[in-house]
Length: 117
Image (cartoon, rainbow, N blue to C red):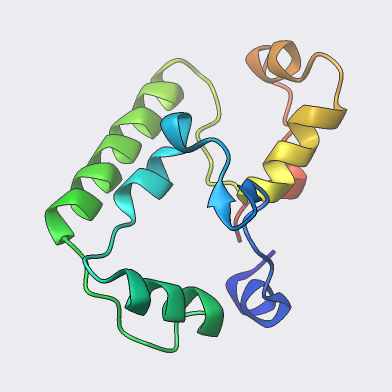
């Protein structure tokens, strides 16, 4: 979903259970890069969809971005898709499509509906 529609929809992360990340030890790299030194301000940001400033530790965010860039370059070198995906949509595809991994590894564009635009 485009950013403007996502903002308007105010959808919570599909990995939240009781307002907590249920996959925290293995959370996505993008989530690891997002950080805040002020939990209250971060909570306000989530509730208002970015209407407040969140103090972040920029080196952590930049490092996650660099690792993601390297990961995407490595996927491209292996002739695999490293396109940016909307998490909830990509999870839905993986959870409902038989043989999703094998189809993706074979080069099938299974994540087309989840592409970030």
